[in-house]
Image 1 (tube, helix red, strand yellow):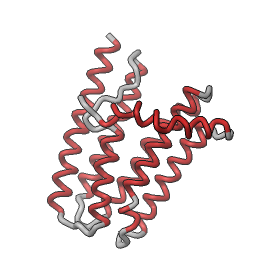
Image 2 (tube, rainbow, N blue to C red):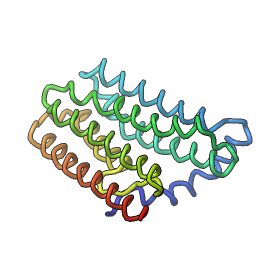
Image 3 (cartoon, rainbow, N blue to C red):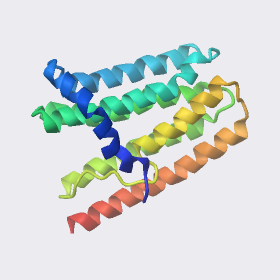
Image 4 (cartoon, rainbow, N blue to C red):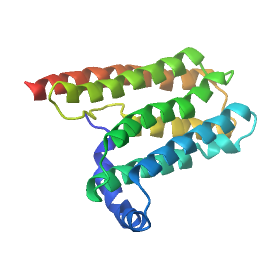
Length: 201
């Protein structure tokens, strides 16, 4: 199914000159991966500790965009500049899941947002990414099928972050969007598992 992840190749083309510059400067893929996780942690901490302040929420779309850029860059450094490693593969997968937790769970502490829906969506996101990784174990490629992949979640929470920053506190719209995202995440898990089994067979 369609997903924003399909735009990744164009995004990488834009970032490739910067990636070459970083490789020349001696920056490693693993350093970029850890940097993305650290950025996510600091942003999530700001949202958690400053719920009444608008700027951490308004900055969330920018943080998510930078995080996606760093994720693309670490992959290009690994593939195109000979920096692939087993540690890098572990950091890449764990970094994505941990960063999602850092950036999205603070929404659960807002009084007008359903903590159950936020937590459920984060758990479904973890299962979806695990399903994509498990595909490799059965002889398929790492699956990134949609409709609710990493990039799609980033767009959703970026939008919600701006809404919070602008003072929107209506529980029903938040619940509707989060509930829909949960349904789409469940569909993503099914799609990734089905595609992996089909590819492996």
